[in-house]
Image (tube, rainbow, N blue to C red; front, side, top):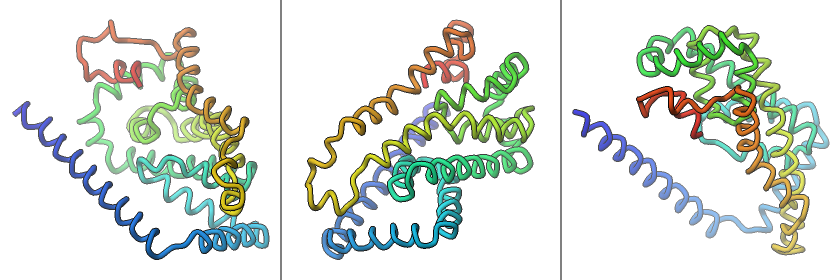
Length: 253
């Protein structure tokens, strides 16, 4: 029985990989045969003009799209795209509101619909989370967000934990803000398609952009190191004999 579970998981991963490769190949074929770079430049300019001409409507549509897409796990990179289109401050607001709204939806679904399932499958993780929440309070959730602990896992586990919805919302918004600022800055440093066509790949060689990319890659690890030194995110590998213990997973994320 124990040998079947990993095999089944491997088959699922292979299936997802095959579907992903097929989807990318289809998209590449379509773009190559039916979409020209000139058309993309024109469409981008139209979108930017529409954003400037109808700022409030564009903001509302952008927020709705971002919140809906954020409900789907694995859709990273969208914050950079939104900053590229909307600019820094509008993108930061859209990203924070969209992520918090999506997280809250998952939080309530976890609490009132999937709670028993989560407690059954992730009981040890919930026990660890409740233990930390009792000891460190809201600051622990805030630390998890700043350390870029998996977004979906926090949403699901928090819904089944003892944390209040109000605490969950403000720690989500505040905890995601530093990373959002970095990713939004990356987005505004990227050239437009028109600039890319006129200046070539050289327009991507930008010192502030490279610096922002480096910060976005290093920031979670630096914060986790600082948090562990302060005793917030402790390495609990020595405290548990089970390799599936959530505290162990937290220490290696």
